[in-house]
Length: 237
Ligand code: ADP
Ligand code: ADP
Image 1 (cartoon, protein in one colour):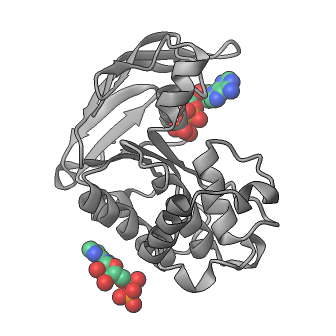
Image 2 (cartoon, helix red, strand yellow; image 1 turned 180 degrees about the horizontal axis):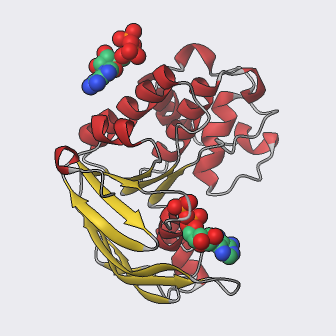
């Protein structure tokens, strides 16, 4: 589903953050990206959706090259990548439902009046998705009235409503307590299995990654130092 070939990134102000990384993630696979701070995890995820421009290498989504695409094609490809962030990136004064539907527009800037003109089909799908993530009782609550775990469930629902081919998940549990972190990781992994959805989850909590991901990729100083099943992971990473 996702193919990363020889991906390198050198920021103007620094060293190489990624040094020729190659990874393929098939449909349905949940891959955890681990490694110490500064290893290049965020850079890798951001190069995939080109929030960061790679210096070298290629990224393909379902056979279509993302790298080198112009803004129109890039926007279309980005709609097939569901982004989930550590800090949720919710609009505080909007409700759960409004936040989830705002993802349908493909950007966060969003006006209330827009919501009223949403096709019924999108609203129906939003209800189904909110039920799946356990937020059906909270659809009309404002984002700023939610707990951390609930906020991340909104983030997940918003990403899912795009019907993505892959989830790109950047530190989804970094602001959550251990129990909520497990619940959120379990939810993401269950949904990926149900939908045959690929995911790359950037996560610094190694035990949590091992508990839920099918595959672990360890990065260190921009290079892959481990790529295999969770149980094969050693202290080397
Ligand atoms: P991780 O997500 O694993 O903590 P990052 O991808 O954030 O790693 O960072 C990898 C390296 O790139 C680090 O050395 C970091 O300082 C550097 N870096 C990240 N973002 C930028 C940036 N916008 N400009 C310059 N250097 C950056
Ligand atoms: P609760 O069951 O009350 O939610 P926990 O948050 O501790 O309590 O556990 C939630 C779920 O996390 C458990 O039902 C279990 O499936 C999973 N879990 C917890 N620890 C592990 C572990 N070490 N390995 C695999 N799954 C675990």
